Amino acid sequence: MPTSSTNCDFSPMKKIIKDDIQQMISKLDKICNILDNEDQCLLGEFENIKKDFLRIETSAATFYLNCYLSPFIERYSDLSLTIQSLSDRRHGALIAVERSDPLDSLLQTGIPIGAPVTHSLLESIFYPGSPLHDGAVLIRANQIVSAKNILPLTSAQGNGITGTRHRAAVGLSEMSDAIVLVVSEETGRASFANKGYLYPVISP
Image (cartoon, rainbow, N blue to C red; front, side, top):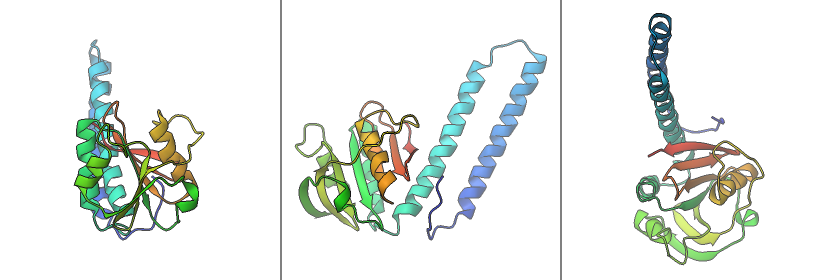
């Protein structure tokens, strides 16, 4: 996870992650013992370990996302609720949250909105068939500045970068300190891009 200056207290999250990792180590030790003593297929156990690791990663990423955004947007709860709802419905979305670096010169400006951040407005923007659902929403402070913005695409491959939305999220995060949220309409998985990397925050 990239470093970033925040006002968050990392101690509780570190303890939770450490405890979860210790539990994973215990499970791995158990698997090693089974390998030594029994002749049985362990693919199911491996799958459970993979799910445990993804859960730990998602929990930590969600915490860091809150830390990264809370100094720049007071309506974080509305944003979080929107991402959860869009993920549940598998409605694709792309939301760029401006932090310290101005973003106007890095994107092709879309349709001005100029409205406060609310989960109902964000959900309506990304509702399938909405004239505004293509492209990215730009959020600055507590305002939805515009929709249908076109972001620069990354040339990087891998790390979950599978479609245009993900390439756009990573692309803008490579060129600025913006946090870019993306929801996949194929899987419902929600991620955020920071400094050229994608991190899962909701994995159905």
